[in-house]
Image (cartoon, rainbow, N blue to C red; front, top):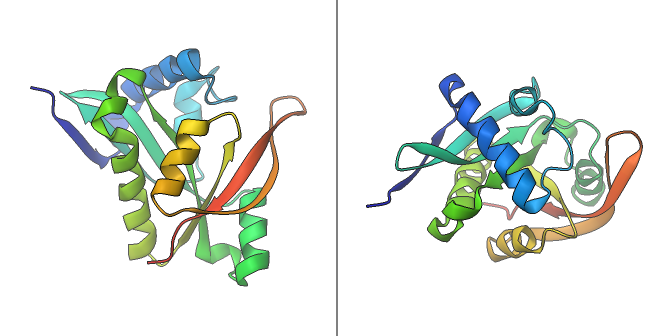
Length: 170
């Protein structure tokens, strides 16, 4: 019987989470950066909190809440809301391997991150590439609201169109 759990990320999860990230990149082209050094990308010093989804004992997904690092979604929300940067965090590094998606792993990871934001008085924002239509549907279904559009910059001067969202207020 397949059983999905979502729990806080632990150091022991790093290898499996990195493997899942590489798998998602090969099937979906996400993320556009970080797959050359997946463990370093997942372990960034900017991570405030992170969770993994586990299906029958194997890590199949991940999400993190990160400190702002100049993201357009942060700037857009600050302009709209008047919030300061220390009241905002970025939901990032959400991925689920294809085989686990029918178990609502992405939704459960999102809900864990959203609960954390609400419990800590932090407003979450994110940007998502316009090509990632399944992720956009998930965010909108969970009540996230579009606050603007901006290019997502990565690599050596590359960019791709992205939509910026803010989490629903608690």
